[in-house]
Length: 614
Image (tube, rainbow, N blue to C red; front, side, top):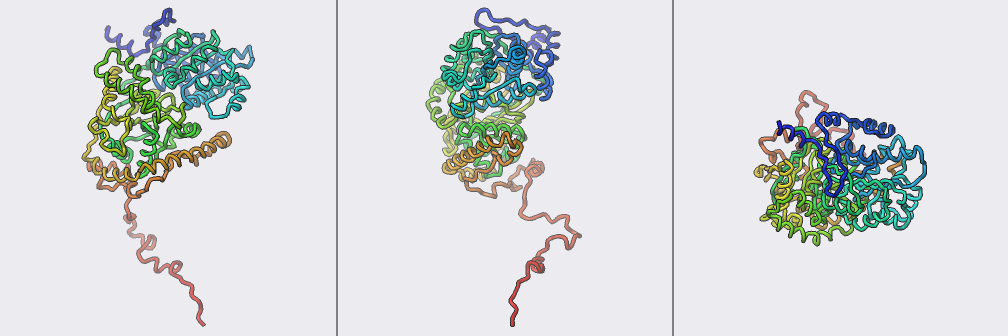
């Protein structure tokens, strides 16, 4: 009986008391109260009726756990720090009470001033928050004005955008402080300060900007922080803004069979490309997939490699214009294409910064971490160079709302266990299921194939050991993904042909060409998004770069290469294309089909005009 009740308590959320003195307390709910709470609707939360109309229009059935807990506290004016899983609805948890509070004030006071400042770590997340506000405010658009400061425009344009004193300003901390310091943005009457992905804000190097903003924020402002993890950075933020918020450590109840199935495949550096080729060409993974790589060059190497086999994919990295990156995500969410190759450059630059996160998660478990810590300390020096030329406010493994992702492939393993958690969090969102597959290069195979080698793979085994320990503490298992290499080996010569065609020169040309194309597309996006939102089919991002030598025979798989056990099923999926058309079924239909020698008897094709002789 005792173990049963304990198990039920473990499945429900936990309200964790803050370590600082005099924290706000939330009473533990009883079982009947918990059952009643699960049936809570948006109407019960006390939101403005116009917001309820927008919620109904978006077909949200009932609030998620973080929304049920955070919205009432926010409407009561309390400071909130909420930790909830990826895809749990954290954006709506602060946007809805914010909009409701502004609408309530405007019912009696129509004075125009900036009431809310939403700080986010990346441009992609800023765009996502802006669209969420637009959707929820669709029935009160005249009463709510929002401005986003993350677009790359001149200071004069930003000043013009802020001149109307919009109710809500969305920005990165650096841009917000720049405009506050130049008097373009006034926060004297600020009532709400929100930090989304709070644990990332400091990691992206915004600490000085946040400290500057904290000195000018009014004392009575309500602060809300949303995070997927509770790290030392979150504690630092609490100190910067001198706040003691109600701490919500929430975890959704998972139904049996839900969640992420995690796999790991140990392979050589060139075998990553072999396995990726087999997986996607034979359709072993179906549905939408995100492939994470460690560098921008790796994006183009893998895309050009896929092009050799007719596998379409698109690229996401910090060099691409913001509008193009946003459009890539939107089209991916609309099932326009199924494979995104994403460069997770921020993870590579933040390897050392995230090491304390592992210590917090793993507690006192220190065995074998000495070498890891030493290695992590060395990484940022090597990785920092890779961020040059890219957008410093780019981020893809956190915050961006990829929808209905079936699988995440860590083509290059991240350098920390927490980065791994955030990457695989792109799938199995909002109660769905998904799969995560990670390629790990054993130490004895590192640097054995120099053309495909990357420094990020040097410590794959140590990082994976940490990941396995961390996932075990959460009750998750990372299973081995055992390929039958005897059946895969027949594809190896094709993989080698394709890799030889993808040279450094072709990668450099592809990178330049893609950037040039995306810049042109970005200008088109600016012109056509509002005027012709449905005429964007010509702006596909998964077109062939065609800088590598094309080999037509690689795009089709001969039947003899297919595994014998699954030959029938695989050929129906792949669609083997023969060199001659099948003539079966044409018997008894003389005169209708093409016949050998018929061209000679066709007067239209054999007639020759000749000069008449005298």
